[in-house]
Image (cartoon, rainbow, N blue to C red; front, side, top):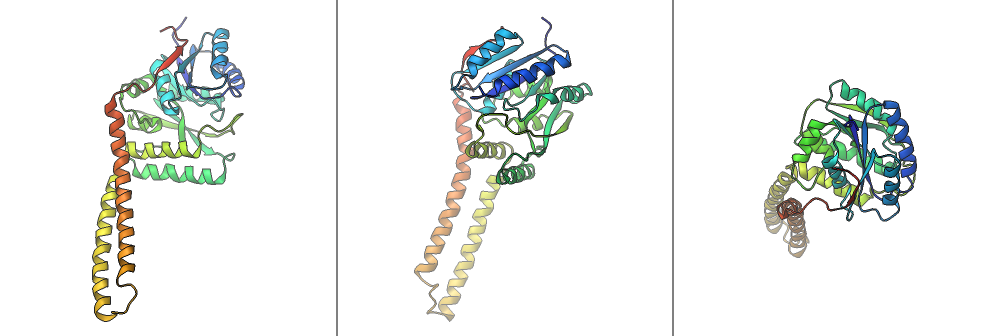
Length: 312
């Protein structure tokens, strides 16, 4: 069998309702492309029939492989696991819920053949999402772009094509709290976008809940910016300045308005709560960075595998 020209990495978590449609559309697209390929589904500890279906599809088509984790390790780790195993000269990462349309694969490959080494799919519309989610996503990408040390493209998720050279670099990075779209931007090389309208989820429940999205956002900011640490410093200086102003204010009131209710317990209570809030915010920011250091130094593997269909 010829070595694949391109590989697809598709993380799976409880996607039994989407897999039949996904496989059908992938089959149509890959046959139309007409080049050697491989598809690697990464089962991230699914609790439904996803793994059973992946076994079935592998028996039907030996180019459809699967990698099954021993438990759920998270979306970014699942993508990383897939990147560790694929062998194509170009690697396409996409989700299984069909919000990333497989029909864009030929366009991604065309841009890669033009010499681009990273082609990220950039959303120009996501009308199916609630307005609050759209607003938060819009705001996050622009805040991250201003805070990050590298230019991370706005409105782009993990749906992308990466040249094998880029994938090898990502695989060589040992960090554990991985933000793929940030690492993808950090490596550099020749990059471009492919704009598309994001489809609604085909079936099943949304896997990226608000809590998971918030966690991913924090990972993105903490992994690519030192601004939160500087913010803690500036917040401490601000608190010191306000405290100094309060000293002068209390002296003024004591000398000229001795009966003012702002003198005594009231102003002391306000000062205690304000300084306490500043300290807790600064400790929380430090804790986020220290927690990441703790995860790195433990040296545990990113994931554990219980089953794999690959021959190598």
